[in-house]
Image (cartoon, rainbow, N blue to C red; front, side):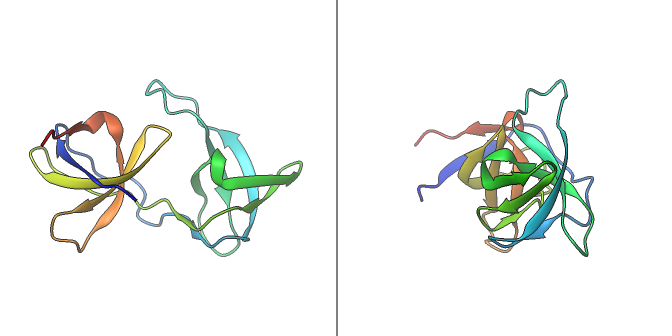
Length: 121
């Protein structure tokens, strides 16, 4: 997958210390859709046995019946804490968020796309 360098133009700190994490095939309980001023569409609050619920991209779940679903892919909702001025590598954009890795290579997670500016070579 192609990575792109991004400059953090606005810092981001996660408000979720225990992010939902699951593997492909995990059964999920589906809750509300995210509605907020940021314009982040296609996020659904899901719960998985043994952990706190969290926001999951609609594209990676398959609704089976009513409020139950199954994971189509591995996923973690971990958010990356970043400070303005940092450089990160973005690997995947999904519903207004980018999966990023710090240049140290030791930390990765989701950062809002609006907090980043792509760095042109």
